[in-house]
Length: 154
Image (cartoon, rainbow, N blue to C red; front, side, top):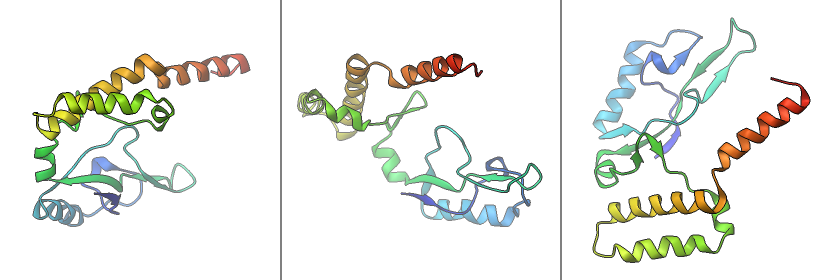
């Protein structure tokens, strides 16, 4: 489940603005415990919301989050490897080989558990994509740096 929960799990998820009451934070933590859910963490900027226009009034908070029940986490314990989230890229679908990579790996592991097969698909897709498209984020970053240099910025 994901969404804007309008609550933080601790003051480490807030910068600036009024201090949040511990009872309010504890109530949100308790709700996750009662519902047997856990926060799945984040990648990138911790803050998902901000308010204010000056340094004195600026406030950042992590209000949006992904959570999952304990059962889901135990089934899909491989959802996070080496503290790196798997991210399927829509660009991959532009190459007809993408579907073959998924079906080939899925069929080979027919006697394996679903979480194991999913992990294999993730690994195969990631490897295939790096060989097929290269590491796009590195290429994009490199081109941005080159553009800034050519403009005399940074």
